Image 1 (cartoon, rainbow, N blue to C red):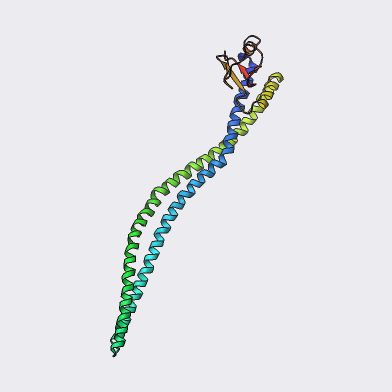
Image 2: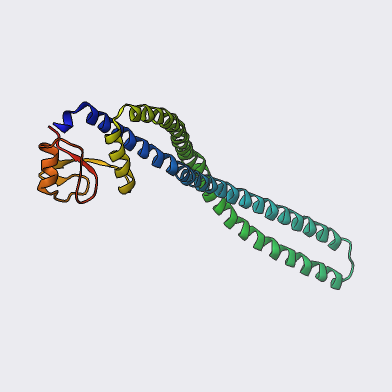
Length: 238
């Protein structure tokens, strides 16, 4: 039985290692993209915290500016009232009274604006504190996952190098006729598997029915045989 042939078993071992090697290579090729996607998500989360904090600070700054303007106008009103005590003409007194009324109107507008800002500050503060808490915690979790993924990538690189050496050693142990067929198949078939068991007279690689000649070659002649549909090396697990 071909499947039980020691040389064929070595070929199966090589195939298993080749498939693992190919999978690791593909995983490493995707690693930079995965890390970039994770970095982008972390950046977006951090920006949301920064935006929330910036909005809160901007509102606090606006509130301080309004407060200074109100104080300044109040100072101006006090100066105008002191001037009223010194003037002797009604016209001058009335002019100062009009200016005081104008300043008071500005103060009323600024105070209304300040009330709106203070209400917004309460909401912005709550949002910022929530962002600093939950979002920062989420960012830390995402960063830990990102670091773990990067660390796993380094482990995979080491595994690839070790597997590469094992593949080279295994190839040296396989008979040339088996090795030449395997290498030819690996060039014909675009990607693993290069070897596939026959199940219900179908190649498990392409899932198409193989001919009786292929089955006979595997079971009776017990020689290395290729699927007459996809070209993969086929065998029966017995």
